[in-house]
Image (tube, rainbow, N blue to C red; front, side, top):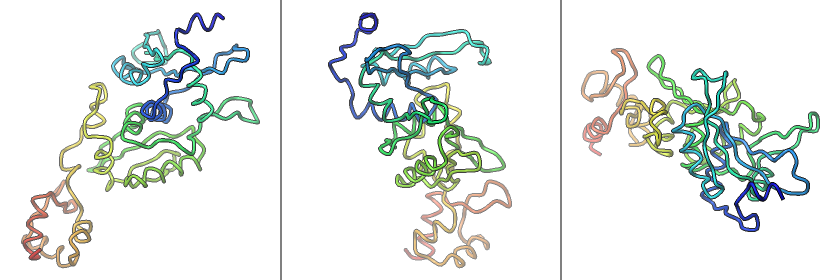
Length: 270
């Protein structure tokens, strides 16, 4: 009775939609979690919860779960450099208990509930965007860019499974030595084409702060394969200056922007 009074949602009605499932999967691929109350008797209910650094991001995430009376609240936290954490939560509901069953299984060794991606996990622009914002990193170093999606807590085979799901969407990636998903440098344009080139929250603009050529430039082999031309002939024409290209540094690899590719087409009478 007490739980019903604290939760104004009608537990006899389902509020779940495909859009919410996408958001839940992105939320849980990151640092989000689903909790069942410690004492419920026979009630099969659960709620979503997260703790993040920025209020803006907390509000952005929890807005997807407004059907479950989501909210954000600030708490003191010594683990955060700012000294506080923004906690996002929903109210308890049977819909979320069903999602708990999708994502969690009980460890035979410890008796604890472990979060693992389910077989029907949604890999969509929305879910991957939430995943990237919540637990992704984008680092530019030594004229290259490294994008990683944290999956440290998942079993290795589930991380391989997620990498395969990403590849199905045209995003070439792999499970690295840290048990994280790493996007191949050549797949950076495809990754941002999938989720979008702009962060929906200003606090994470830096994760999308890449020079425009990163999204448009193609390597020489990719251009040769795409146009069906001889790679060695193209390389020779670039070397002697007949075909322009873009280089990050004086001795950097040649890359081709759309205007360069048009020159290549003319040179090969395409």
